[in-house]
Length: 181
Image: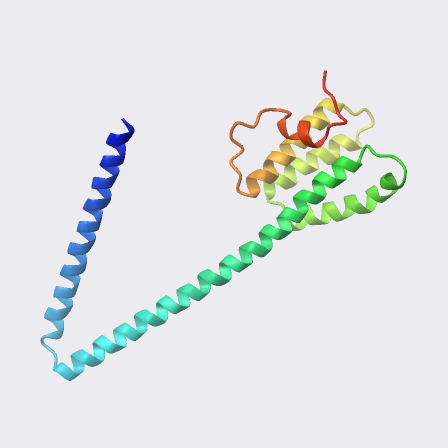
């Protein structure tokens, strides 16, 4: 069955390519027919101007695409730092001593990063997590579940599809101090 689908895809692509070649041939034929009415010098000048304009458009489009790619890389680095900071803060939230004293400053940095680099879903899930951890009576199971939701949203924002990730897969790896019975 897969072979039939591959063959049908190949035929479709071949047909579209043939259609493209026919359209290009007809376009060139039309342009030549229109230019045949003009003086040969004028025709050559128009062809040169059109070619230069097309090349300029291609150069400008290539530059825009290259700069857009650089911008995305910078954003991805900031987002990756945000994800790493999230994991670090939640790993250290159960520690005691010196590491516990550093937590408010680290949490403040994380909050700034999420506000700057998180998409709307990440921000919503993280806000719910903060509300849950701020309550007097904390349910560790629901906090763990919400932490997993934040991690999944961060992975989605990074471009991951999150297929076949079951409940507690991520938090089971990262937050080994919590146990749900």
